[in-house]
Image (tube, rainbow over all chains, first blue to last red; front, top):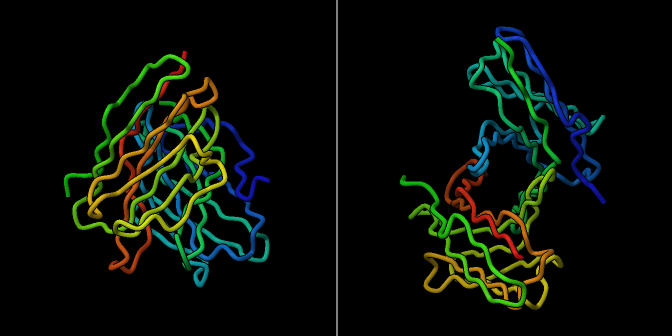
Length: 113
Length: 115
């Protein structure tokens, strides 16, 4: 079963506008959430994370929102830049034990000039 | 930090052959993970080491797969009698339990093609 889902395989946004990437999860025990960005032929690069005790975390152009009641998180990128074009993965973790990451399928973001 | 490194970056092998991949984590990181990623999917957890101890293995890790982390430094992942279904990107990640944040840092991956 897919515990973390990204239902949009792709998203196209104009440069300078806001990009919103969405992620849903089913396991209410998850208590830590992360977003990674991946370019072709490279490993995933950590972007931003949020603990389940918070509902928002901001780092520069990137903001992650967590809605625990809806089991939903989103990543906002403002303003979007051409270098943001990549595949974005959300991941969830349990802070107890191995802290292994459970990933969604990814969303390919394309920023158009 | 010099980052997580993996070797080789690409491996093409014939079905039935054995292959071994190496991962060098960030030097002060005591946690090391292996993941596998297939086309169109996110990475899937395979196994986890805390220092030299292998503490968790996914049921994805069949008995043809073995991983080691001698002395708690680099790690190797060996696949015996490779099958075409083993073709994937194998990713290594590391983290530290002495931080207050919990992100894992990934290497560039080893792309395995089994012909």
